[in-house]
Length: 303
Image 1: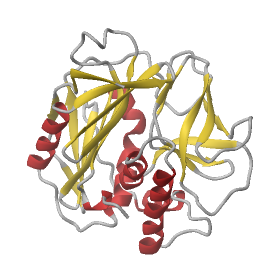
Image 2: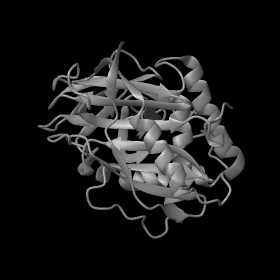
Image 3: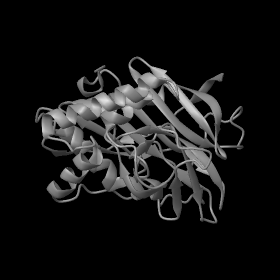
Image 4: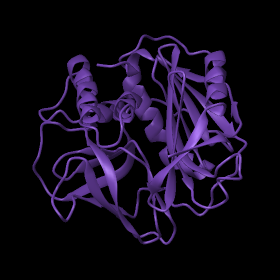
C-alpha cells in the first residue's frame, strides 16, 4: 500500500440533524466528483457459497447488470449455510463474477442451501466496526462480530441460531415515520447517545438512496442500547472536518475498483474508488463508497 500524502476526502457539508430518541442523523453533501453509471440496487445480484467448498469468510457473487455493480461492506446476506455480512466493498464488472470477503452474523447455524438472499439491509454500525477493526481475514475480527451480536441477544432477546437478522426485523416492526433524505444528499453522519458513531459517503445521491432506509434501520438497532441523548451539530461538523483531513491510502484491487483506507485519532475509514482518473495526480479520488467509524464511541469499544 502506497501512502499518497496529498490524497484526502472531498469537502463535506453537514446539515441539521434529525433526532429520534438516542439516534441523531445528519445529512451530508459532498463537493467531490460524482460517480455515474454504477448499479446500486441489490436486485440482480446473486450470492452463493463457493463452488470449491463453503467458507465462512468468503462467498461467490455475480451480477446480471450491464453496468458495474456495487457490493457494499455491511450489506446483510441471509440464507446459505449461515447468514453473513459483506466485510469489504467491491465493484463487479458488468455481468461479472467475483469473490467477496464475508463475516458470519449467525453463529449457531451451518446448514441449508448454497444461495443467499440480498435485499439491501445493512448490519448495525457496532457490528460493522467490529469487523473493520482488524485486517481482512483475521479470525479475531470474526470473534468480535459474534460478541457484538451476543450483546443484542443478551439485552434484547435473541434467536436459537444467534442471527443478527432477528434484531433488524425487530427494528422493522418498530419503524415509525421515515427520516427524510434531502435533495443532493450523498452522505450521512450518525450520532447515537450523544456521540458520533460514524459516517457513510456515497459517490452519488442514487447510491445513498439505494441504502438509505437500511442505514437508518441499522443505526436504530444500535440506538436501542444507548441512552436517549441528542448528538449536537457541533460534534457532527467536527467529525466531518476530521474526515476531510484524513490521509487516504490507495489499496488493493476491489473487483474493478480500488480499495481506500485511512485512519486518524480514533477514526477508521475504508471504502472503494473508481480506477483510473489519475489517482496519483488528483487530490480528490472518485469515491464509490466510504464508511468511517469513531472507534472512541462507547458502542464501538472492545468487547
